[in-house]
Length: 386
Image 1 (cartoon, rainbow, N blue to C red):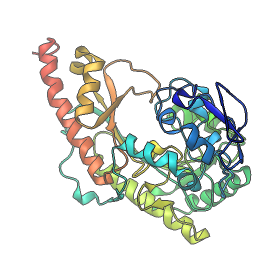
Image 2: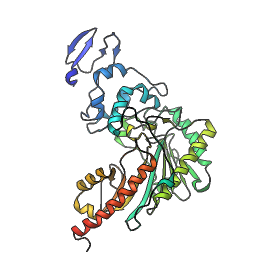
Image 3: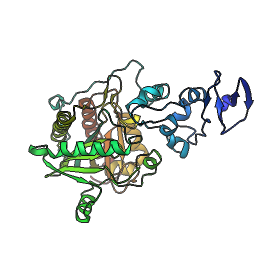
Image 4: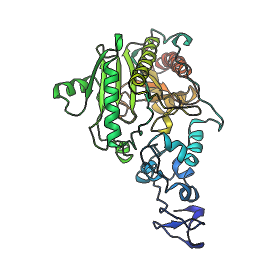
């Protein structure tokens, strides 16, 4: 299990092949047993060595008492994780930096001295999606977290309830085109629940990763959904992140969706700060703090639902390879694990960290336009059109 580190240390005596027992450092301090990491090819398996484990396994974070053992629970439980780690609070990224720093740098392809840049200026976006492209809708979302509260894997029950109360009051004070209503999951009326399901707004429990990572503790308490009257602005409270702020609408007007998102983020941030003095968790190096390190930086996913019959005929593998070249990510319209049906795809920016929000939206716009032009050629190739 330990590879070349297949020895446990007891008072300076090396004992080979010992698994699942308490270990001792060279200074004589006890540390927890080194876990069996089932996701052998994950970034956790690469960066959590027995030596690193010995240094970090007994640390508990100040904000929520989170541990490295809890952080890497999905990599231990499942054999299919690529990353395999979550942060329980902002402290996790500092207390367990020996794991998080190299893992984040490898995943996002950034240097150790990289710094995050943020830019929500819609006027910097050039062009738009070709109006002839068969785009059904646009959706752009970000995650945002607030100071003083744990992130979903580590947040305490009281912190979650306090945060929901703060956010409920802040959201219900929004005005203009963002004005709407907050719906707590606890005690939700069936008619409201069904309408939110029909609108594809409602997040639900049962995701294996989120459960093992500790994000569904005390479900559904302290969680809820906010949306404006037009149902184009939406906020999830205490799901995978403290908040997911979402802007969306039918058609392909990316600029309008991005402009509304920028206004919504600013309004939510100002409202929470006015009520509590708390601001968004923002790190100079890693940008906006999220529970999953893959979402660090902008935390933004800008996507469209678009028909690509030519690429469908060519094959999903070919489309995935082309999207990789364009720094895009293709998904099915039913979400990350929902599978693909028909010829409609969810196409979004691949990166989160190392680029500004404007740059990522521009990448998505330019990439979708390229895919659309190429799709027309592929449709002719496969005799779908003349």
